[in-house]
Image (cartoon, rainbow, N blue to C red; front, top):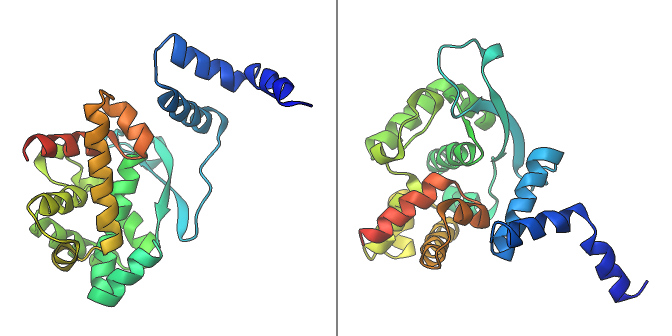
Length: 237
């Protein structure tokens, strides 16, 4: 089969037709259309992302589920949690110790849950990190005392009432702190700090290219609330 024949077959696929509709009828840019296709495949066909080393799938309450229902009647969703981030976590452990690492893990797991439409309880965190609920409660109080948004099931609140750890890190960078200074103050690894800042820069760039918040979130693999938070920060700096 020659190249031309292969291209003709590809044009006949449902995937190509879906992309064509998005691009020609809804006027989506090709890369946004591709991202929407992948998201649709994941939702409708059950094509879940492959787990990387250190990740696990957990079932959590949906973030929009109402309180007061029995657990059996509460809407649930499956999310992927990064329990061990490899080098990033090792850097935190070596520089700041096990307690600091656990607090970084808590922030990461809560953010990953929200980004995927779920919300975790303190019991969920304790089970995943193999510690007691009392330990998780103590860590959450410590984080909140420093103004860090801790969106557990019992503490879910609007993004305007608390600042995520990612935004706080980006804010320190905007104020002129170096990666090493930010790492010292926040106990995050330089690798993760660099990634948060790169994502912030990309969000701002895509916004200036007239991409909508939902499109930016799909392209960068982050939550829409974080996109909104980053854009608000860019306006204030």
